[in-house]
Image (cartoon, rainbow, N blue to C red; front, top):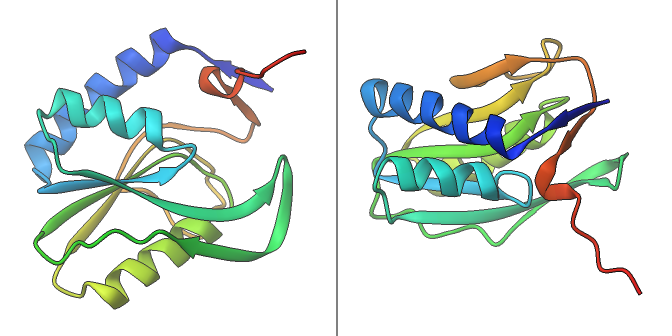
Length: 149
């Protein structure tokens, strides 16, 4: 298992944001909740972009992969042309494939690109913008918050 720190997020968000700005210039960002929220927020700040939305997908129960993918809280992207879909990691790729399918079916006018911090080389889909390839389980700093007592 690998720990991913705030300092790494700060560095990686700047790197991805520059590439996204130079190569794509999105009109909107959609964060995949919950894992993609922190990274998407950092990218939106770096790009001075206020049109940021979230979408929910459930494919894991803690570390256990489920047999189904539930996509819900789909944002209204009718007014946008270029949308950046952001998550923390593409593991199997199942969720990203399904979320892309749902968004493009509902909003065929959008050009949709993906951005992640980590991706697994054997995933069904490879991201358009990425930082690192991994085969490890990643423990992101934002996952370490828990109410005790």
